[in-house]
Image (cartoon, rainbow, N blue to C red):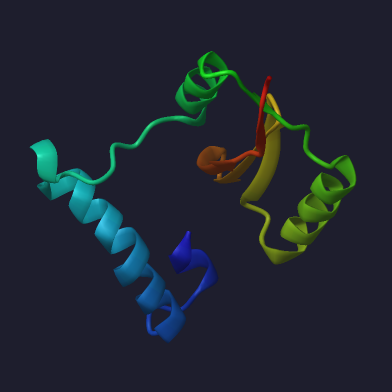
Length: 107
């Protein structure tokens, strides 16, 4: 994704790769047991966990979704934004990279 959109010598790319993806990759590849900080899970796993805890997703603003899709098409054709069960899915070439949602506690 970065190779398509940013040159390899771009300083912002380097910083992002080092600080964000580098740390995540190291955590997943090299660290086990109690020292491991994160354990990647799908948004569907989080949805089930939160639903069982009595938390419900808020619907996404459809005007905002429409605007995001339009903006993204201008940026690059392989980026995608989709929605599933009120989750905002952000992806690259058909693969979900990140998912985001808003929740509220059911009384």
